[in-house]
Amino acid sequence: MAGSGFVGEEIRVESPDVVYTDTDILSYYNYNDSRIRGNVVTPTTERLVFKTQRQLPKTGLLLVGWGGNNGTTLTAGILANKLNITWNTKEGLNHPNYLGSICKSVTMRVGIDDRFMPVYAPLNNVVPLLNPNDLEIWGWDISSVNMGDAMRRAKVLEWDLQRQLYSNLKEMLPWPSIYIPEWIAANQSDRADNCLKGTKLEMVNTLRQNIKDFKNSRRLEKVVIVWTANTEKFAQIRPGVNDTADNLLRSLENNSSDISPSTMFAIASILEGCTYINGSPQNTFVPGCIELAERYHVLIAGDDFKSGQTKIKSVLSDFLINSGLKLQSVVSYNHLGNNDGKNLSAPETFRSKEISKSGVIDDVVRANRLMYRADESPDHCVVIKYVPYVGDSKRAMDEYISEIFMGGRNTIAMHNTCEDSLLAAPIILDLVILAELCTRVLVKRDKDEEFTKMHPVMSILSFLLKSPQVPPGSPIVHTLFPQRYAITNFFKALIGLPPENFMLLEHKVP
Ligand code: NAI
Image (cartoon, rainbow, N blue to C red; front, side):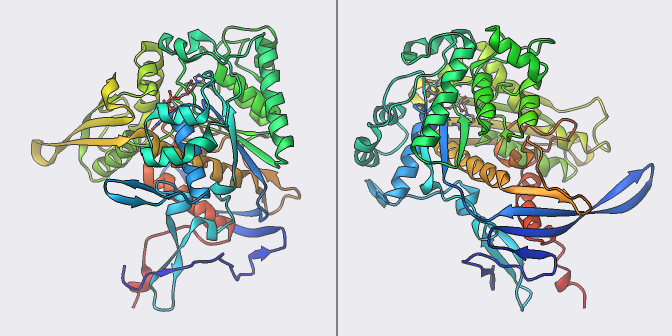
């Protein structure tokens, strides 16, 4: 935009409501909304205080499923950025980047300049954020293959880049992990040669020791753990087994078959005080696990990285329904040929993905009782097929049919081809960077004495997740731009600025 400004250094707010100390940013903030009873609306204001620690901690990232396509692509991508490795393709010389990361490649509007023109800043100039190049990375995998060969196996990155990264990556050997065959597809058994033995409690204790050793040997202040391993089948929620934190811990001690590997990682992570993010669709966060996170005040987020088709769906359904076009049918086909696709070719793991993808239009539909009755929603069908030849280059084909003015029909069909892991890797980075920020933010009501941590379930990360976990009782927002503004408005709140309002009144009021 002509005249658009840009702030290329850390922003400093001058306001009686914002205090910068050597260690923190304090923001005295008016949280405005409206309370509605019947047809009577009363504006409300809640005075909150945010305290954001400015110092960035030395942080480690542990990936579960490290040797997979996402794990290796992320590790190789960060290394390439850190070492500034360039590589050749038939198109010419390529430079490393962080495209696809909102923390590294996106700006947010901060305000207007003297000529009333918008001024933008990268997110890490608003509040301090981790630099991905500073992350210490390690992980677990049920496959013993080193990261160099795992990167080759993934066939995601260009050969000339792989060639230059191989010697560094081949030194990285994943820790053995938990393999319980009934939780993932049977077709994964041939790569499971790096598996922990013992009871479930013993395995969780080994994971906890891994985390401690990693933290101590690298002198880390914080560790974030991300599940990017294969999709598991859904866990049954059973009273007395996984419905409360105590029952979950007791079931672990009893070696209950109802506890999945991903939930065991979550338990280990929570007990070690490490933020845990679930990037796959399964219900890792059974009620007992959420209660455990609440008990230990450890942040958690999930489920399922929102990388491509679902992102588009959460935009298109918003566009159609909020344009007054009655969306009646959404059909999405995927085919992909990577190991994720192979694992999803089994009915039980596919079912987890299907559930995760299916809720994405619910909130826009529910918000519109003019077009949809309370019991009405569009047909929504999700199909995923495994086609080895296309490898990581996933195909997504979608058809949206809406009813329009005077009985007309509007059909939109689209085709998307993209390397899945090149979309997912920067999303994993954003999840880690934003989750780490959340661990540095304390909040209180103005009248309260003590600051507390935010609720452990980080719904603020919904933009990056297909099936967002939210605090119990909180509404789930699926639509993409509200999710995005939930992040940038939160950033603004941390430095005492009002949320984005889009009104441009400075250009309208004479
Ligand atoms: P992948 O199959 O290449 O990698 C998964 C890795 O996990 C494999 O190396 C496997 O050996 C390992 N693994 C399986 N069970 C394990 C366990 N219990 N402990 C440790 N390691 C274990 O899959 P990819 O493409 O990396 O995707 C990973 C996950 O992320 C999948 O669940 C996928 O559905 C999810 N996801 C991926 C997206 C993408 O765009 N790539 C988007 C959304 C979700």
